[in-house]
Length: 496
Image (cartoon, rainbow, N blue to C red; front, side, top):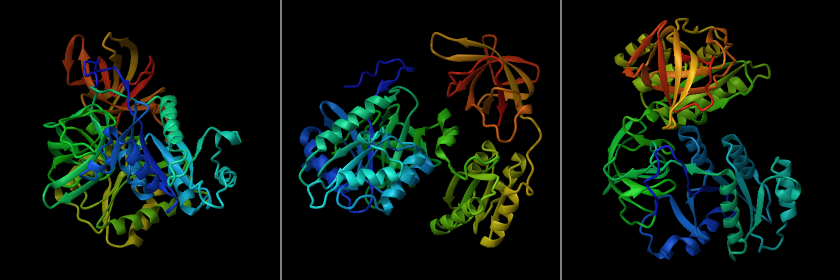
């Protein structure tokens, strides 16, 4: 039973969310099936009436949530769109086959997502099983297990006989305690979508796992720009539930259209909705570059989208002398929307479309927001213009400062809130403004200098009064969302 009387600022340990990756036929599904048969809570495996893409077990009185839809494409999609779905990845390698192409692909995805991993050497019951050879091949991919002088936990198992599965579960619990996975049960809702579909009888069916906060029937939420009111919710056993806590997998009804896999479900009107696209949820092509170009990419179909995305990525990776990198803020199918323009504005980027329409309303917003929005009919024109953009000849940065303030003093309240006493140097600070924090005056910042933190202005104070805007030469108190614990005097805020 979860203690919901906890302070809103207090974080509590939650169950780890785990997924399996590896080469096809190396036994990912067999391992999951074996774990489910023997460990599903209350031994209700035979009574499972629906598939929601995840389930929860109890091992030595500790819960573990498994995403049982392994696959590199789904994992990558979740990472690109909704941030990290899993807290831990189990990399499955067959003992008699060793590291294969999809194993290497899985390793690349795991490293890119910076997710802690456990190596499971499966099929130890088979003739020709050679765990030492597997560890050697993994070392060649820079995956060093503990008995080879590395840090990665490695467990030898057999999904067929059940050998070592308890040790694997022990390893998952141990690693989750080491990385100290926590959530705020009464904080802002964050639930990640792992499956979504249109059912003829039920309507739009969405499977998700709560990562933070609490999801309840009747809640008004939003995901993928679609608003919904939760009408019904059931757990992985098909039981109707009214509440889901952090790490709980549930199936929900209430969306009018199908949201994207990997997107976050957030409380309607939440400050997080404005911050749902952040540095951990974008794809970057080309590292260590002096110049970063942010792009929102839309296309008419998924196939075209991937082709255009690949072509743009090739512009960066094909040249050894490239001085720029691409940051895909968002990629998707369908017409360019006003939210695409707003996202590009907040990320100081551009919106590129292929074979899709731009409405007059979007054009007006793009013009007033100084955001470059353009759609193309041929891939050649798109790539040609993109090349010019990347070289810095197609668009210049907006010189006007929207808002800039210097931090003069920090006030830490008993509630845990941090108020930054600031003086506005240029432009204005407004409630809900998205800002970047720097440790020096943004006027002296180079293009390659990354901000220390991104946030939005939750509240502005003038004395004891709440205000909506603070103009140049005014002093005010600023409460940020999310809070930046390391904020200090002589730092600067820049409105994006």
